[in-house]
Image 1 (cartoon, rainbow, N blue to C red):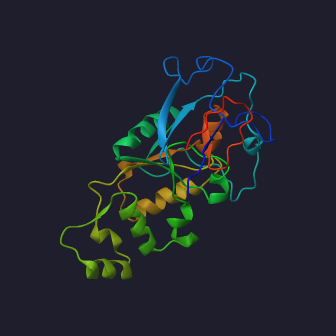
Image 2: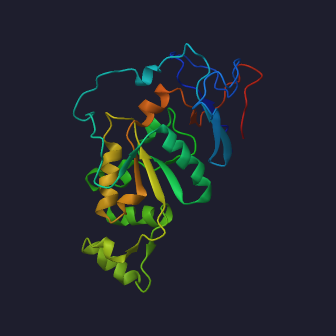
Image 3: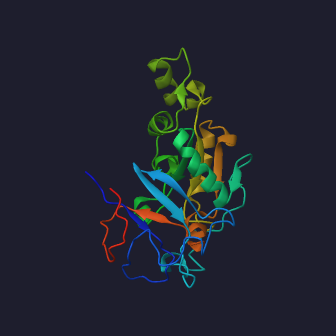
Length: 249
């Protein structure tokens, strides 16, 4: 199925349906990312997406993220460090890693559940929900192994066969059969400083031997991303409100 993707500048301050277009009446330089960077482009599910900041200078934080308080637990403030030796990064570093995804050595991972991802995610990211990695949320070692091998480029150690893998899974010794030498660098995020889903995903990855130096924690997550007015993407049908809307297929 061919989807028409949307590029949404969701920092508009309105809960009403909006024109989901890449264009603006203002110059892209009106609100840059840095003094020297106006935008970057990434590939999201086969389509080129431009990431830039909302150009309307009166834009505000969208209603989805404007609450200052959410029940804790589960929405508790997360520590700056998710785990020892896991680097915490900000938006500029995320943008740098997004540009490296084209090399195949980096993945930017949205850890949230589908109901949140469908409302908007970071262009260039992939969706690996935290429930598929965290065993207390239903993940199994076998399903985690599948993600590690199929998505994260982890390999079975040379010389190990299927019996060795089955035995390691049965004995909870999965690290005995895994080779992380070519594993991808992972940049994980969820909804922000009040969301613990990324922290739990990171701990689950460390528990199965993923190298801490290959895990990056974008702590501010979607809360920080939309606060800066950065582009998000959804998979809804594009409602062309103005003829200048850039519909990508």
